[in-house]
Length: 504
Image (cartoon, rainbow, N blue to C red; front, side, top):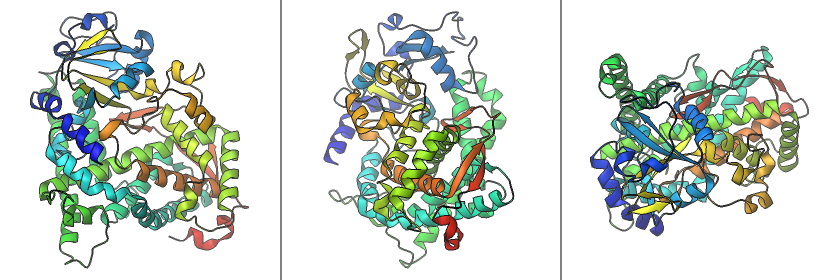
């Protein structure tokens, strides 16, 4: 934790420079920008708009990156961005002595909602380090063991819901149901709140507002600088209403805990925010920052995990040999136990590889930005001023043949066997970001996802629609669009023989 504090403080000057001036175009930070290729047919004023996709900018940048190489640039109107995906260059950008997190364009667009929350804070803002130090114990092993029974409770709700759909011969809406699962999990474990997602025929209004806020932030990335506000006036009004609903929901959750006179204390993340002072300084989080942190955890804590589970289920349904091997591991490791204990989840090593490989191909947070702490040169060729930044395109980094081989587009969980992992260069697998500002809830997300996937593998066989072709929707995070699976209960599964396991 001391290392994190040092890195966070060192990032201050560069973070402050970019924070105070809004978007910083590449031409201001890269003095030899002409060395970096850009798409052909650049149009004056408009930039690289010909053939560009507004609806899927990340996947569009993948297409461009494959054509232009491991470092390239794109421009839309007055906004020019340098993209990096080569393994060697990404490793340089991961060096905490030279680079720090940059709050990039899409993330900055979320600041009206999340402010200086852990994900959206600028490096110089003191509440980031304060919140990190206060909340980090909430992700310790002891805390995780305490969350495990609540995760199982929510998983029971999912399986009961899916049993009904399976019995009726209906396909399940994988992204929609994974969103219900992960929202309930973070809400109950972190904040003692039940959204009742599985009792609703439609998504909870919190999810609708969240998707609206994320989608609006994504659209703002590509809006024309002058026409954008006029073209999106209606969208801006809806975004304001979405943010107001998210804030009011969080305020209700916080006030319910405050009004419990201590009887509602649970030792969870919300208790830490309300009751815990910094161990060294005695500082506490302000009410405003608590709201921002709760919003951050509710949104980021379920949106990315639901995508990871959805992509994993897609690949399992399309790879029967992988599915059978994963099911066999669950049966071997968990045996006849009705529900796994906390320590049994980490023993599902092949199931974890399935998750890692799904996150390799489709990291649900598909990019992160890094800025120079001082003047430096990237790759020995591209000078950068202090504060200059680049966007690391994780989806192409995870597909770089130099790190992953010529079959990098192929789904293969054995890439994450220990021997294979040791043979790869460092810093080539970054689904949770990098450095001091990497995802604080990584272990929480991985435990939840491995547990849920193990339970589903033991209970069901999955059958995909043969006509389905993977399409990925973008709302800052990634999610498979329209993924539905048919389920068959596995009659030889221990859970199938135990009616109590289906009760929620």
